[in-house]
Length: 129
Image 1: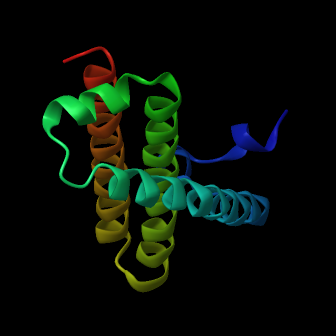
Image 2: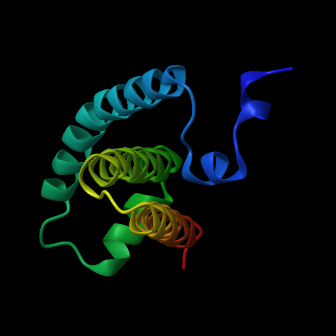
C-alpha cells in the first residue's frame, strides 16, 4: 500500500501529506523558478523585437512553432510556480482551516484558469486566429 492511499480526503484535496510531500513541493518550485529564468530572458528579447509591430506581425511570430512552444512553456512554468508559492503563503499565514482550504482551492482554480487562458490564446494565434 502506498503513502498516497493513507491520506484523508481533505488531505488529498489540499495537497497536504507527509513531510516528503513538502520536499517535492520545494523542488518543483525551485525547478519552475529555474525554468522561468531563461524563458523570461527569451520573452523579453522577443517582446523588444516586436515593439512597434502590428497584430499581424505578432501572429506571424507566434506562427513559428518554437515561439509558440516557448511561450506555452513560460506560461505553464509561471502559473505552476505561482500556484506553489501562493499555496505556501496560504498555508503559513491563514490559520482558520476553513479559510485555508477555500483559499487553496481558489488559488488552484485561478492559476489553472489563467494558465489555460494563456495556452489557449497562444494556440489560437499560432493557428492563425
